[in-house]
Length: 254
Image (cartoon, rainbow, N blue to C red):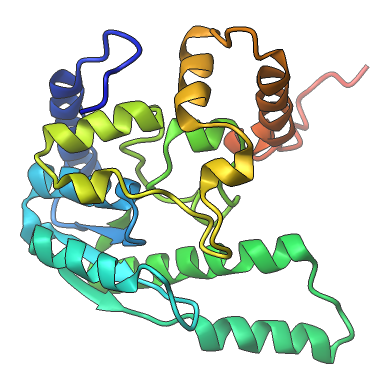
């Protein structure tokens, strides 16, 4: 069991999220279902489980979206079957290849960032397509830790219509998972970038435990270099969490 770094009350928070989800659907689609992109990771698993408790498993629909192949497809299926929710598999590989081939045909070289972010944006487009076809609302499955340092794709996995975990750190999200009674293997599965064999923490150069403690308490011990790295990542990616800037014709521009 994870020992929280603060007085986080997992049961109270879990119950509040369940109530919040119920209220969201009461106001924004009382007959709608929750559509959740199932990656095989802890966040989508816990979001789906929260929606099951809030709405009932018959109103939760999972979508598994490999890009050709997906390392955790079997785990995503196992999770959907464990939760006893309906699900479907939509392979985005042909769509990805078609778009990238069209760019190449027009002499546009796909940048490394575009190549990394395109699958996430195709998956989100797929989720909205499914949701509009089954009378659903798309769940965002991001957590606060990843959002804080920009570890999400704008208009990709960073999108959605309601976000149960967006204000909770990874440490807190795991506590919610245990409170829901989910198996440890689903909660403690090491998150990876989906592109290489590197874990998220390998990519960051620091642990989620350090990140969560720092963003919640400001405590970084003597590791000023890592704190500075986190600050730099946050500052560079903060725009992802802000509303789109809009020109206001009523402003005084002096």
